[in-house]
Every structure is written in structure tokens, then in C-alpha cells.
Length: 194
Image 1 (cartoon, rainbow, N blue to C red):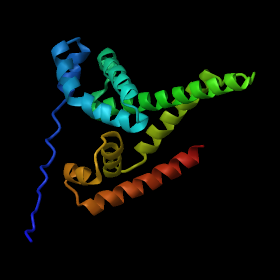
Image 2: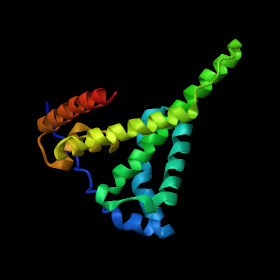
Image 3: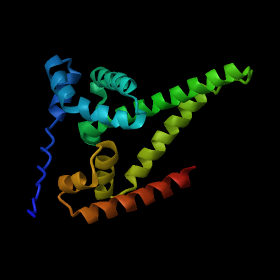
Image 4: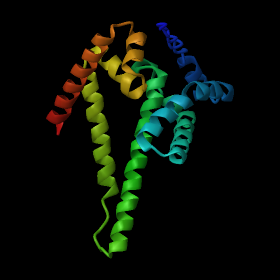
């Protein structure tokens, strides 16, 4: 029996998107088209994993990319790369959509059951979500640079452990250890803040 070895091609290096986002911030539609082509697929994949519904995933991805167009000037190059910034927006939008759908379902259930309970306080929920986002950002800053990069690539970049290993040019076992340690530190940090 022949032993066939399949070599997977290393992922293409990430293009430098910072010049594109700077041009998008100035209203350059061609730059936006290039940025869209570079990131919309990854944003859709992330959103689809959260929502699990094709139509809603497409809709949320379009909202995300429109948000990128409208808010490109808010991107701060010193705080990180463009792709994680866009994917963070995508993840937040997807989670917001899940929460919205749950709230609608709960409201419909209460109405159907004849319940006269007051609905949740949306301002309080938004404040709580904002505080959670701040807590996550704070906890991410507590990680080592390598742990933070591993987490961002795996969870916001949607890469597998093996892809993270290739991207960071580190052994797979090291990446797994970094991620495990980072998740433990994040859990402890998040628990300490609540």
C-alpha cells in the first residue's frame, strides 16, 4: 500500500491592510473593495459560527462591512492589525444578533403566555455589555504578547491551532500550551472582575 503524504500549503501571508483602511477612511471606494475582498469571507465565517444561520450571517456580515466603511477613520493602527479589528466588530455584531433574537423569542413567548412582565432594560443591558467588553480588553492586555497573539489568531482570526502554529512559526504543542494558559488566565481575570 502506498503511503501518500499530503502537504498542505501554508496560508498566504496576510497582506498589509493598514494602507487600505487609511484610504477607506478617506472615502476611497477602490480601497474598500480590496479590503472587502480580503476580509468579508473571514468575517462571514466567524459570524456564521456564532449565528449558525446562513441568511442572518450574510445580513450581519454586510452590516459589519458597512460599519467598516463608515467607521474606518476610527481604526487606530497602533492598537493592532486591521483583520482582528474587523473580526472583533463581526463577533460583537453576531453576539448582539443572538441576544436580539433571544430577546424577541422571549418577548413573543411572554406575549403568547399572556404574561404582563416588563421587558428587560435595554440601557442596562447595553451598559453591562460595554463593561464586559472593557473587562475582556483589560484581561487580554494582562496576557503575554505571545498568548494574546495566539488567542487573537485562534478566536478572532478563526484559525486552527495548526494555522496559528504556522503563522507564529511555533511548534503546535507550544501554541496549544499558550492557548490553554491564556484561556486559564482570561477565565481567572474575568472571574476576578465579576
